[in-house]
Length: 96
Image 1 (tube, rainbow, N blue to C red):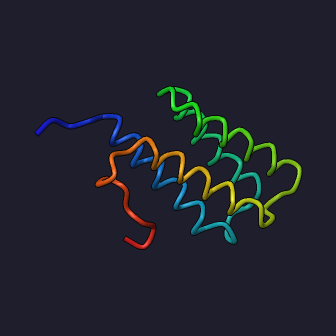
Image 2: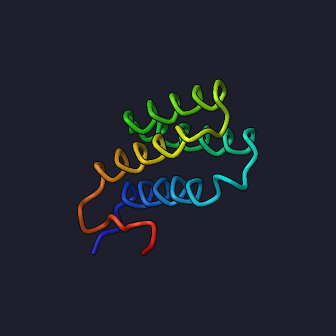
């Protein structure tokens, strides 16, 4: 069985997004922005354009509105965009 490096990258991104969703009330805005920026950079490096664009939009929303309720919607959009790149069997729910 061959190891798919893109699968590992997508799994890492998914874990990062889920981690942010789980820590949303416990992270400062600058720390949250750093984490989103890291997600954007990874997505850019591996040409995952939808994820990169959403992360950039989330960064803008954070700079305008802080950690308001809109953040969870963007994290859901990011999760959906990452999941769309993965084979169906590889997608795990945050509870799993």
